[in-house]
Length: 178
Image 1 (cartoon, rainbow, N blue to C red):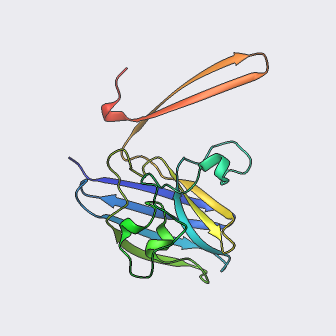
Image 2 (cartoon, rainbow, N blue to C red):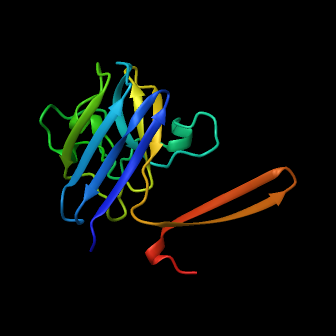
Image 3 (cartoon, rainbow, N blue to C red):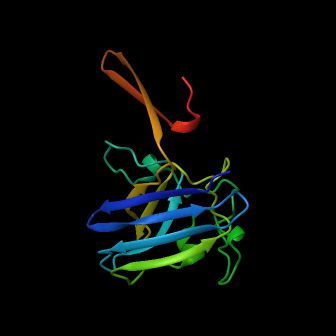
């Protein structure tokens, strides 16, 4: 089974940079590398959210668009784990809880390992989004987490009166069959 490497490229509200995620196999830890500039000491928490960023919608980073934090195991967030807790005590998507906040920083460059941030299987973060929050926890900037390798996109549309529906299907090219 080939390793997976995916990226979220951040370019919103002046923040530029990327989040790289790499996992050699479903049985290995995931390496997370961040390189962010122009944070202007405004932001704090950052998380993986449930859905990708929509391409043409207002409030792109809102929970209405990207969903809440990626938490497929329904980890109880009302009692946050203490410092030094293991990664399984956090939501899969709680990157700042597991690896420290962006608070008070103008730039940030760091690499972490995470044993509960899968790129394989049904709980994978692939195709979801990364959201950077203000210190107040309001959403501020976001980017979609890409897919490994080449991706095929198929679209279909329906037009009825004034209602237009567009559905995009994304699938890894090497396994896509027509």
